[in-house]
Length: 353
Image (tube, rainbow, N blue to C red; front, side, top):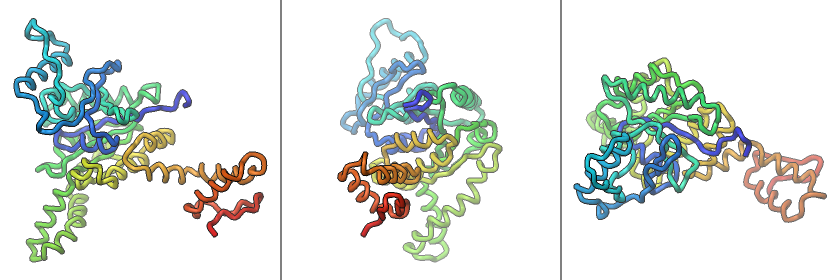
């Protein structure tokens, strides 16, 4: 790999604790475990744990002791007792992105990496509370520093800002400040509206109130929900000085968490790809995602490299390509007739008979 070619794709994910961030990251990575956590020097802070069932939950005393120990470790405080601290027990922290005492002490500089797909590097920001500027400034500084790092490997490549559509206020005033005050430069921001089913349900109720049958209301609800969303919600960020480059609306979050809704994660990846300026980053993101192999196939075809390679093999087959390789190329390209045609110099028509 060339020296300036990154090997990992780095994403800052922003959003409230109930925004579905963990679900999205697991789905994109094809992971079922918790991520490992590393500090800015790359030292392991918390090893990955398997996702736990209710039977695995530790006692409350153990949870409190574990959280205190990790809180002191993160903030570099000495333990309150002279005795040994209680080591983390599996699952005591729950999800690293979930609302917890540990997460309240989180550091945006820490890297979250899933062992099952270590080519994604995530950074987490818990969002912005009204009247608080500390987190906004932390995010601003993080983006400024990481967007301009000399090595593309260490740069921030994209930002996913998550908004829970089932909230009473989908986009808060404090969250609008991000799009008003923070210029992310060449780092694209994708606004991700999770739990969009809540807007569908509200729209369905509104239609039913007009005397429409439930079945018809359910069919018409998504269209009405999308229209009201574009009219009432999107302008809150699209009208700001630094609007998002793309918008993704995710429904059926429970199916995403079960790995059964590849369409949702595919849309997120595709819109992130189109938002990127660098071809190298577009290729990298498609390569590292584990949610949909069709993206890899589509990107390979659209790049033209398959057609160019095949045509080169056809032109030189008498000296460099054996009959098995030539037959493989022909059979492969029978499935993609729209990207190739007749090789004039080889006099071979590359269409299915």
